[in-house]
Image (cartoon, rainbow, N blue to C red):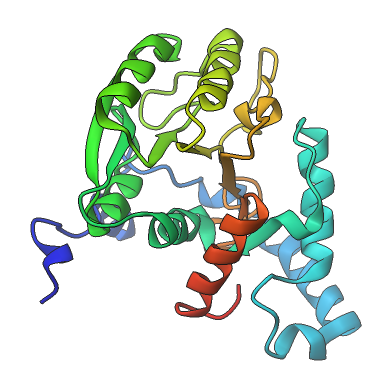
Length: 264
């Protein structure tokens, strides 16, 4: 087998979800919604509507760049969240997990350094390990990753990528402070050869407090790749996510996606 599988086991998250089929177990380990929160009647009604109006177009092969009305709607959604984006800067993907895979496919060679929060999302770590990245942990506190420590690691390791979950971080639940978001955007101005993956699937699951702007909203270099998923808002089973990147990287990811599933 390929060496990329050396030392890489199956997804711990998927193993957790196997337990959920047992009605005797209530698991607090997996981040799945209650079945009562999944509005199958609403989704069914919407699905019937779009199939009636544009069934042939939706059932036919589509362009890798994605369904145009979805890209337009998603761009408007991001503008409300403080990220100025055009539809052509978005790539719909099969869950944000695929976005991680495509970025790694486009950018990582075996042994390339990559900075990650300590701790961070298990699903992301599995992807990074499959691409044989040299993972370098960066310490966090109650306000998230510490920018000074992040800069130290940038100087020491010269990473290609940084991976952060700034809002309701997985697994800690912490939210990166506004000051640190601005400071990290400034770091990217200083170290222009480093790309930041801002994974932001949880930001709209807020029930109190003030929403903070994404790091992407302070990006002046184009080196913040912003991604997330509608799994947390609509349905995990639909597996519809999004990737927002500058034109050159987005094109590489689009080509990489064509080698996987052609289009979402």
